[in-house]
Length: 158
Image 1 (cartoon, rainbow, N blue to C red):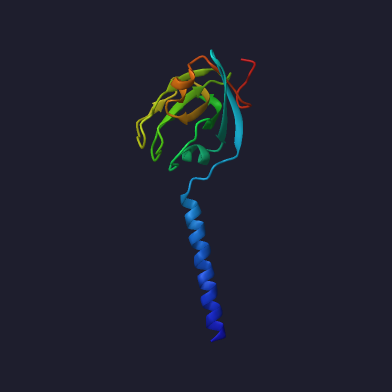
Image 2 (spheres, rainbow, N blue to C red):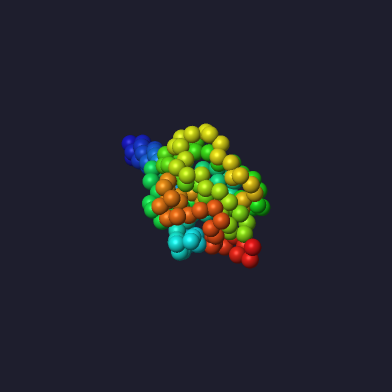
């Protein structure tokens, strides 16, 4: 009797652990935040960004997240500079995608992208990074192609 009680306890404990692991795997986890600034005609706009550096991180991006606060974003590192294509598959938040060249200059902005879409969104040329922010941010803050992005990912001497 004592042994079967112990076995039942262990099975129950393992079930709780498995449930906790499965639950956390389904949630989108945030990466540590880094500072990024966009220098616009109107002034400097600060952001706190998560940086996606690995293939796995870039593949997941903002998928399944239900919110992205103003002033926050996700920066995708595409080392080396290259033409890239993005999409919104499994992305629940409308976004502005800001395509950034290696020298930190904004090449292109795809505004108010369609949620959960597999439509391809091209960079329009070689870029080093893509910054995703909540839809409407670029227009609201006057962010335009040619503006400069300051972050260690970009060469400020360009």
